Length: 328
Length: 211
Image 1 (cartoon, rainbow over the protein chains, first blue to last red):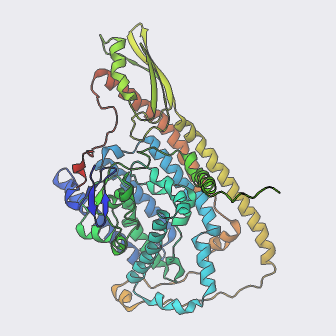
Image 2 (spheres, chains in turn brown, orange):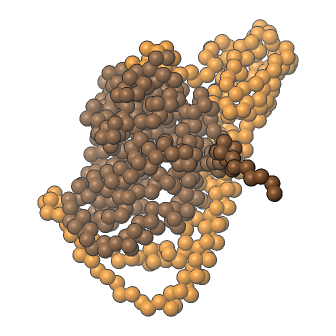
Image 3 (spheres, rainbow over the protein chains, first blue to last red):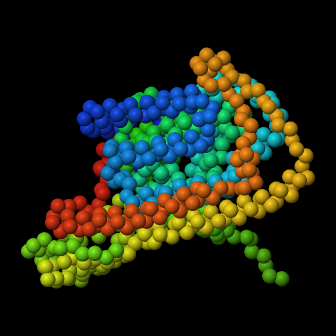
């Protein structure tokens, strides 16, 4: 396999990766299907923003956001059956059950730990350390600008955390289990070691004071954009969307079995951040995972950072043994 | 998972096993075929393996009054995991309740020493553009009884209960669905209607795919 030169890198030398939007297949089917899968993403984005912008205060609550998020995921699961991107990514009962276990972990164990040492705790600590009145001006900005800034700043932090995970071994150990997934489905974002899920959830966007509605609007950007990172649906995504936002295509490249391809497309929502830092690769991949596609069992996923960390430590000390001290 | 499938009329046991055998040409699958009996075990089977839900088992052809039958007996750790998952979430719910009780008793003793803080009312600004476009005016709600109680009651056990329920349903669905799917798979293989061993990749592995 020769691969394709993208910037200074050769992508697709180890596993097949399709490079360039002109080589990515389009939605197949009749005019109705074409229409739906061309306009679904932009229409849902505008609809969600419109809803959160105009919803009365009694409805614009976190509970509504959670309910809407679950309902939207169920809708997208339905779309996976109607217009799958790849049949090899078809959701099976076993995959669904395993994914849901990780989702359950996120809603229970990770949330409990996060409530004590996660973003909420850190935000409170940092806010307490500054004279926060200086940032009250943020509240007076237009709602959509606030929402954009919250989303962009959070994603900027997440980009560097994610990039750090791919470049620093201790962080990689927490992130590696997520890269053992061999297909993308709607709940695959939750699959991984809980430590990683906790780390990736840390953001700097929360350090500002903002209107609650702006936070909900920023959340709707996540729901209407970054949710498509892990989904088995073929869309005719508009080019402007692909330029600004992350897509399934981008994220499939990130999960490719090709090592160089996996070191690209780090952002969750704003792929333009990857474009800014030269890590964006436009294209898609079907063969995903690590070690040629070996799936990682749940038990291994839970202990991987510790077992591999221990192995790495032993290896390090074996290579650099302490200088021998002559016996007295 | 135990069940049986009738062999098509006139099909020999040897021919039936020949048609089923390719299902076990999968990564992570070891199998042994001894005439009319096939035993297998799987380790690290990929999600794309059509029998990935099963970890070991045996298939054999048996003569019955109605003709030859394929009998199979397969074991799945995924079912066991799904059966036990509700217990995990129920245990977690109980842990949340205990944490809540501990926090409540801890905070009650602290609250009695604290002076009551006066409620602060904050005027939230609204940008002129949002006012013009008709967005509802921002307001800070007074904390409700529920919200006030949240700090005392600790983490909620409700999500854990919900997931325990979901996994009970998922187990029941899986037992019925997977039994039907594997039976249909065997029937179609024996009838020669299904010839692809796995949900194969559509991406060609030739270099041309990358570019």
